[in-house]
Image (cartoon, rainbow, N blue to C red; front, side, top):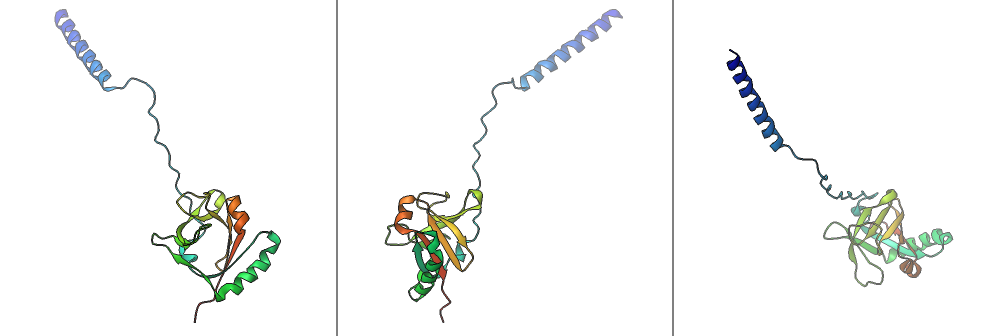
Length: 165
């Protein structure tokens, strides 16, 4: 009887050791953690949609903040020869870049701090971008980010022109 019991215990022990050995094969040894995938930040939404800029605008610019009111009135008078902001083929808006004769398609993009920018490419606050200082649907004020361009062109004021009859 002892032999049978001993033999049963031996078989059971071998079976348990075999299962433990197989279990060890299936587990990974601790090692360095894999590198996490780089997180690509989602683009921030702009304060308004590009189609809100499409239309006819009077345009003027200023260099000194105290001239903004007078410049807005001058821009309103330019509606006789309006600057037309069109819709771009990819959903942006057609505006001139600094020192360019032809308009380019620009993107309206959100940026850090709730700011909105208008410029080429998807990244906000690029060298050729303009920051939207204010926009109420009727008056749009854009400031060039590049100091050299800002020195030449000033702060742009666009006043929406009345619809054509």
